[in-house]
Image (tube, rainbow, N blue to C red; front, side):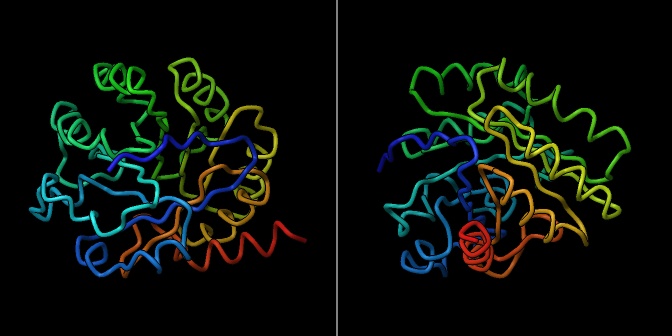
Length: 236
């Protein structure tokens, strides 16, 4: 069943609930999901790695919640090290149900045929970028990468990077606060929880938490707790 596209709005935080495995997806109820998040992320690469076929639509019982589909590349945290062609095939199978699609900024050229289909169908896409090591130059790269994502036609830019100290948390929040385009910044690692909440307070448009029993990134909140906490702090 199709769902209206979800266009991230500047500085309006939405919580994305992500399933780390097929077991969590199968066990989720529609009521639990609606209470925990605003959108559901379906990680097609994780399902593929578990041998779950996309055509079986294991998310069908969650009808009515907007679906964000992702088929992550291996060097940015994806399972199975799928080729661009394989990831495009997985995503093309679900375009009729997608409210939003995630494509890594580094894959924009290789997956240009998919992006053209998204434009034709009126489905917005998130340009994502991940730094699991926390390189020293990552903070300086974020503004230029966000501009590159906007030029490529992305509805927003999502960046997740490992943080090593409190100065990194503050720097990430500063970049989020200064954003003039839809931006979703978040930390990974031990400092991830505080960074994700702080970035949500400063206008991160997509804020990821896990649904079920397996996080999909280091230091990720549970989606329900993240949504409750964001609602509390943004009302202060």
